[in-house]
Length: 497
Ligand SMILES: [Ca+2]
Ligand SMILES: [Ca+2]
Ligand SMILES: [Ca+2]
Ligand SMILES: [Ca+2]
Image (cartoon, rainbow, N blue to C red; front, top):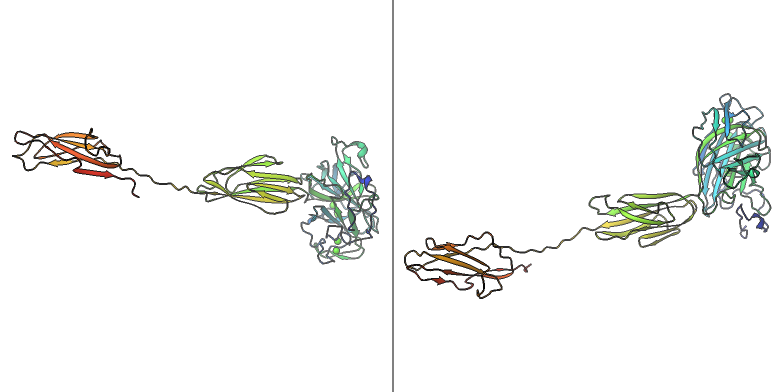
């Protein structure tokens, strides 16, 4: 097997000229899968494998009770007609009476999407011809309780997996795709119908054309098997399963995101594709997808008012191309095809700073500063978290003194009680000899031998030494007197810490 280049089922099929070697008979699992899809039972037989008993994400459809309350398609409902009619009543003895179905899907390590399907029937009537319809979108209101007209909600690209078992041997698994007008398809592309919309070509997945490796395996139980999910046992021929590599079958194209959300099973009245439909089991939600996602989270440390600062991000190959997040916010891009995407956080300026950018995986992820570039694989989900920080400010202190100076004077040693006036002069630090014009001056009358300024408006703010020099006017009994420059002084010094 090592030297075989596995072919994708699509364009270029004619170019495949190599010989498929080593593909001998039944194998328990398809390459790149560990699901035991062709051993005809539900339990794990080889350690490390998975089977219905333990497959992750299993979806289960259960039919209504067999007998008069069972639902089925009537009025000649056929595969190509989305307008179906649901009737109730027992399934005819010569038609398959389905009881349960299972679905699961997974993405292998190599990115391939695998689909696993199983059905169970009440009675082994030999042949089993049934189809699993895998829809992108559910049919609203279509449940096990539906009766009458049901219009199936089909979308271009919906899948129909045909399961034909002749009563013995290996079942044949086929795949049809729903075709609609406007996609370049014509009625000639229909498998059985002669008008669009219709089911297209039925690809034989278990017995493909020469040169294409099988992409499906299937088996119906040839011995009584345990039913580990519903309990009990299933007699010979009551259980069928299949495993399909949907990627190799061409369902998932590189660079395209496809998601299927609903599945149900129905039986045909014969192996013919246009045969009437009979029993069905109502749809259940499924999740078959190669779509990936990118989620960006934002955390801010030490933000004083949480959640108010908005950070801007730009992207490449994502829509919307830009977004903003506050603390605790997130932006999710879902439904992404495999490809290359990037997200860049805007530059931070104080008080905000970038701390870290961490993603949930390293696979395909390149982080450069505040940019993350992601080579997203099929079905890959990547979450990245930006952390930024708010740093508190640190103010510095500058002070400046502001004084309102006043002075007072007392006359002593004169004759009698001196009268007259006193002129107070205050000189700024730039005038150390009191020679210039005073910065402040006030003349006041002497009263009982004393005088005092009454300044309330002049402010001394300049640094340095301020000097007072005052003079007495004298009176009839006393001569004038003058105080020396700077006999009184004060210093404003703002520089001392
Ligand atoms: Ca199995
Ligand atoms: Ca098994
Ligand atoms: Ca039914
Ligand atoms: Ca049934």
